[in-house]
Length: 154
Image 1: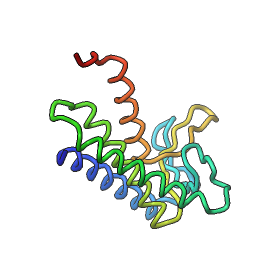
Image 2: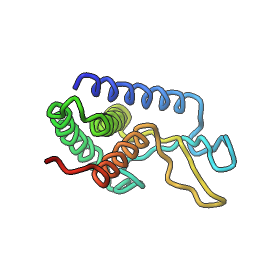
Image 3: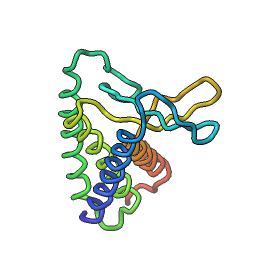
Image 4: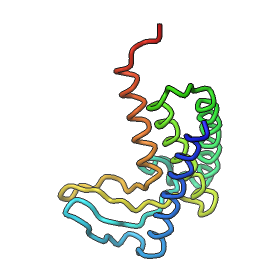
């Protein structure tokens, strides 16, 4: 379990470090082009994914903090119960845990989540996101792929 908590900690450190750089080097909503489909754009999100509940009036901050902390406790229990052979599952759960806690830190410290990765095609922009969101997405994808292709225990 300890190695997975180290991976979660690494995700949190990378997430918070890149958000610190974004906050100190970028101006809100002013894109910095990197390549033709990718900008750095500082954005603030008081909601969840895709700005869900962003305009809810403030209560959503504490709702999402409570939800993420509850899920995080469940993820720690999951990691604790995993056997040492569960490489992909452990990595996936650790990525989700690190991402969830990275965004909780933002909500507690700033009252919103700091996003800065802006992917787009022509005039269509995917909602801005961050390293924590990426870790959650990769972890969830690994769990889904693993569940589709793993052999049932006998």
